[in-house]
Figure 1: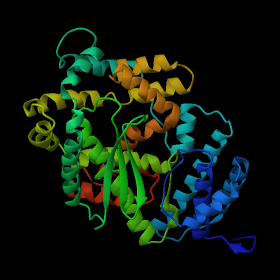
Figure 2: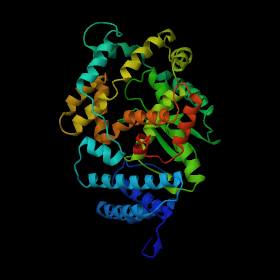
Figure 3: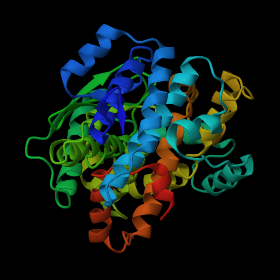
Length: 415
């Protein structure tokens, strides 16, 4: 197949995809999460400054070319072809949204992230809250009781960096036992304010990341391991470093030098990052590490670690409450205040954190599904391939393969 006399191959399609992602980034400041590919492609896009209408037309051409190509008969080639095709479809949908097309929360999730978010009724969360009631001190409404309980587990700002660094060192050591990390991999941590998120990994290429931690609101002890693993080891930092090593450098697939945030890749990225927390700290190992190391480093009583994590595990079962708040808010069925109230009542967020989360909904919309649904799909995929909790070796093997491959969310569900 040729276009204007130039044969269309997966590599020419990859270059077209990169330029399209960078082009959308001119109109959507959040869209390009990372780019470390050839500088001349960014320079060409910056010089051309294509309009959204022009991008939509070019994306349509690229999609038609992708659908006409027949990949080589091996799994990775097929996965690559499927990946570029679905990423282009997602990009076209994002352009439509930027041009004013209105999609419901569920329609947007399918179009951008290749996934169907589940729906949970209010009763689902009420049942979990009833279980939690017996574990929390005090009487009365659960949200203020939980808020008061957690206030005793805040990491003081003057101890924040030492606690995070301890968590990072442990998460890296645990990951290195199972995954061969690049020799030159590294990241730096910055503490920032004024963000709608709690943590962010900015991948810079050459196995290096910048990780930012938002200190606007109190940071609780559980967030140290969560963020160290999710943003670092074996989460986003490792995911990006392995894609760079195995797909960009070894296979010379340039499309992986660019990361479109509002795309199916994000469900894989966020899902593996969240599941990676349990990979690094399975079963009681997390409580043991925190009791002996992190609680004392934060000036907290390590003897309360077991109690804290019994409650924490119950609260984590409420994590889909955030999706329901986002669905209602973005579909116009809840006001901002009502969405924040839902988050307080059913996600047990403080009022301040709930309002911060609604700002996240404004900025990232249905992206919220990538954390919990992504984690569940990754867990299902790895366990369906034999990586169950009682087979940690196989679990890490499958996890490492997933981090190094161009799989799509719909491909996780097929297993």
